[in-house]
Length: 212
Length: 298
Figure 1: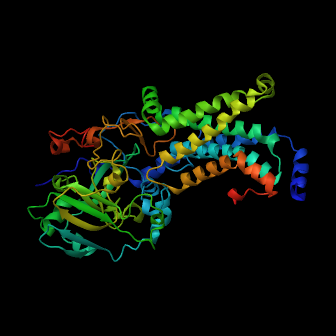
Figure 2: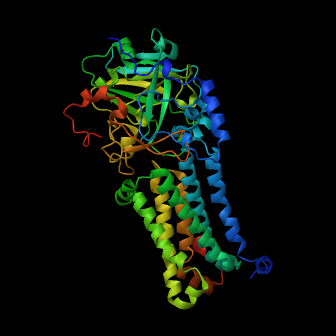
Figure 3: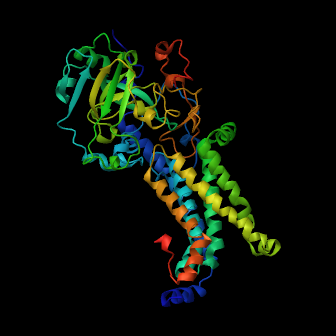
C-alpha cells in the first residue's frame, strides 16, 4: 500500500456514504426543471432521455471500477459502492420513465417496441437484471442471502455489458462514443480475471502486465 | 405545367408572432397548461413552420458530427462560395456548373413542407428553391437515364465529422427519374427567404418531402444521370434498416423504432406524439408507386 493510498483511505474513513443519495437526486430533478423551462434545446424529451441514460451508465461504470481501483492502487471505495450502484440504478429508472411517459406514451407501442426492437429488448434486459441487485442492496438482504449475495450481484456484469451494447446499437452508423464506453466496460471486467492476479502474486508486479 | 403548393406565404406565422409565442412559453415555464400541448393529430390547415432557431439548431449532418447541435457548431467551416456542381452521366450538357450558372433562370419559390426524419421526429420547414425538373430540363436528360445520383461535398479539412467512419464518405443518395421529375421535389437554396444556412446543406440541397429526411441530401457537388439504381449511403451502411425508396410510411416499421407516430420538434416536453401520415401527407405521389409492394420496396 502506497503512502498516497493510505492518506486517501484515512481521509475517506471520516466521510459517510449517505450524502451520495442526496447529491444523486439532484441531476434528474435539475434535468426535469430544465426541460420544463425550455432550456434543453428543441427536442427536450430526447435530451432528457439521453442525458440521464448516459449519466446512469457513467455512474454504473464508476461502480464497476471500485474493485479494480482497489486491486491496482489499494484505494478503498467499497464503503460508497452501494450508494453508487443505487444512484446509477435510479438514473436508469428515470431514463426508462422518460421513455415511457414522455417519449413513446402509447402503451401498445411500448410493448411492441420492447419485443420488436433489439436495442430496446437489450436495454430492457439490462434493467431487469439490475432490479434484484437494487432490491438486495441493503444490510438485511446481505445477512439473509449470506454467501449467495455475492453470486446474485455478479448479475451486474452481464447487465452493464447489455447497457453498453444498448448504447452502441441505438446510435445510427458506427459512432466513437459508445465504442469507447464498451471498451471501458471490457477493460473493467477484464481486470477482474483471476489469472492476472495470480501471475502478479508470483512475479511481485504491482500492475498486471496485460492491463498496461 | 403549373404546380400550386399546398401551403403559401399566408400559412407562415410571421417571425414576430413566433417570438411573442416563445415569450409566453418562457413565462409559463413550469406550468404545464394545455396551451403548451399541441393537438395529437396533424391538421393540414394552420400547420405552423418551426422557428429558424429550431430548424438551424437541430440537424443531422454527420460530416460535422453526430450530435444534433454539432452541425450548428461546426458548419461555419464549410466554404460555400465559390461552389460548383459537377453534372454528368446521361445528359446533353455535362460539365461543372457554378452555383450561379446552375440556378440561373430558375424560378425560386417558397415551399412549406413537412419534414419527417427516419428517427421519428418532424418539423415544418419553409424552404425556398426551384423544382428539380427545371434543372434536369436545363442539362438535358437522355433517354437511357432512369435514375439520378447525388453526392455531398467531402472535405476533411472543413468537416470534422468525416474523421470517423460513421458511414462511408462521401454521402451519396439517389432518386428514380420520375421521383426526381415530380413537382414536389425541389432543389432548395434557402429557408425563410434567407440563403440556406450551412448546417442545413448550403448552398444547395435536395428536398423530397414525402421521403425520410436522409434522402434530402445536403451540400450537393455532383449530380449524375444513370441507368441503374445508384447506391445510397444509408443503404450501404444497413440495407435492412434503410431502403432505397424510404418513403414515409406509418405502416412499415423501421427495425429499430415504430414509424406510426412522430415527435413534433418544438412542441415541448408534455406534447403528445402525432400520427405519421402516409407519404408524409403528400398523397399526390401515390401514383409513382402503383403496383409496388411498399413493405418490400421500403
